[in-house]
Length: 127
Image: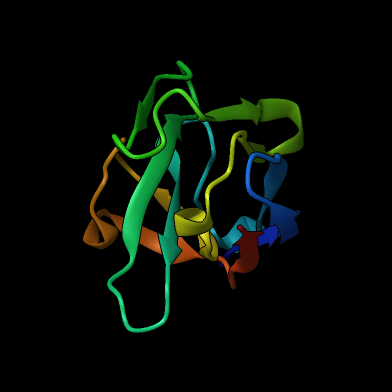
């Protein structure tokens, strides 16, 4: 069983920054390795669908972003720590949501491509 734990959420004023972390751990019996595949960040506001934010591949560090966050958010990884980060700058009130990290076999942007999910961390941006 793979476990993903998000942290770093909080309350920030518009224009501010936050850095989210996603720590991945693996139970040996799962057979899942982190040498392949990707980790993605998604977010969800109450009453709305979960939407893609950014993703990064473990091996090559390839990235992809939603248009709404390009130029403001940066995804990165520390393979030695099995941790992925989401640096969020110039935050806007519309970025308010619960942010989830998830693990996939491909560098995807659809929720169905991801098979392990964290519990989420709340990000609130005040105007």
